[in-house]
Image (cartoon, rainbow, N blue to C red; front, side, top):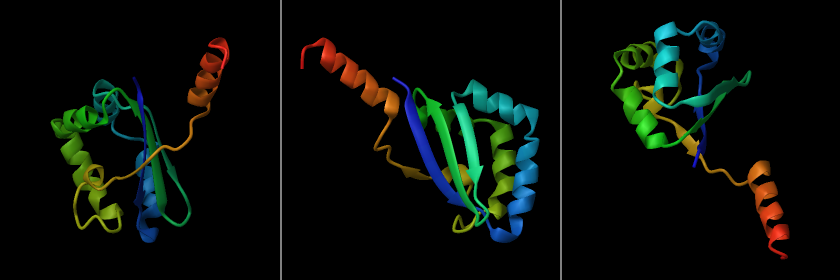
Length: 121
């Protein structure tokens, strides 16, 4: 079963433009590492006040994070990105995720309603 994972971080206001620039052209080896370690449908959304929202789909989030932690490119990327974040105290961003619980998914509820109607409920 695929896990849908949403998380937040906060980008320092004075680094927002540079953060956007860095993510307009992520290193190819970082992109390949994310794909190879199960970070599917991975997106980042950044508001003008610095709120960063991440979303990904994976079979096992803990395993995907652990696999990335083993990649040299991830260590280099995290070291470069750490100064961009508020409240991380120098920790890597991927160690500071504020994971948000999913409370609604349209496809899941439609599937449940369809299964219920087929079962005569």
